[in-house]
Amino acid sequence: MNKILVFILFAMFPIVYANPDYADCLLYNINTSITNVTFTPDPPSPLGLPLLFNYSISGISPTTTSTSLFVEFFTENSNSPFDAHIIQVPSNVTELNLTDLYVSMPILTNSYLIMFALVDDSIGYINCVTFPHFSSSPSN
Ligand SMILES: *[C@@H]1O[C@H](CO)[C@@H](O)[C@H](O)[C@H]1NC(C)=O
Ligand SMILES: *[C@@H]1O[C@H](CO)[C@@H](O)[C@H](O)[C@H]1NC(C)=O
Ligand SMILES: *[C@@H]1O[C@H](CO)[C@@H](O)[C@H](O)[C@H]1NC(C)=O
Ligand SMILES: *[C@@H]1O[C@H](CO)[C@@H](O)[C@H](O)[C@H]1NC(C)=O
Ligand SMILES: *[C@@H]1O[C@H](CO)[C@@H](O)[C@H](O)[C@H]1NC(C)=O
Image 1: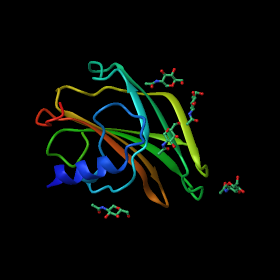
Image 2: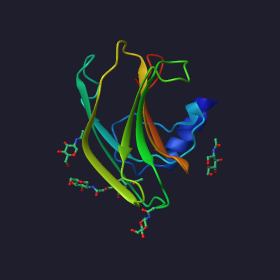
Image 3: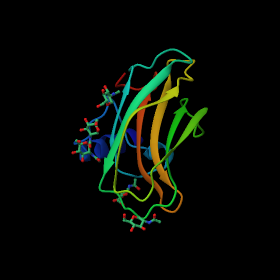
């Protein structure tokens, strides 16, 4: 059922510039639109090497106070990330265009999911996108 839902929502947001095989965050009960994230290398580099990424979003509410980009890594069947990075970004803006950010790769397995989520102290989740690389995913 989740897969059907994910497929329907995926089909509703076709205008996204992102790495292939992206999805929304409904698996984690986060219901937002999806935005532009590109990262390299894909598939990610070995443990400890940087995962470089660009993130852009426009048309968001400017009424933010403290805003962060969360980069989180999940294993399959877990709702808690095993690794999380919180990057403070400018607040009170209506668009962001962040290039050449990086986090250190924590990946030990080839079955994982990367989540990029823009989170604001007062608003909560503004935007969220995932890149599932679970070994059981049909798309991999
Ligand atoms: C997600 O949010 C949209 C807009 O608020 C709503 O129409 C949709 O039903 C929500 N989906 C889920 C699974 O909660
Ligand atoms: C990020 O943007 C910069 C500048 O536009 C570009 O050179 C780089 O290739 C982009 N990186 C990714 C991972 O898309
Ligand atoms: C993604 O990037 C494109 C091209 O820059 C832009 O037109 C679009 O509005 C962006 N999508 C979001 C959700 O910000
Ligand atoms: C947010 O931005 C608006 C317009 O640039 C400015 O007038 C306002 O003072 C800013 N608010 C905060 C809390 O920085
Ligand atoms: C983001 O910045 C890069 C590098 O300056 C630029 O190439 C790109 O068009 C910008 N994207 C948006 C949506 O402003």
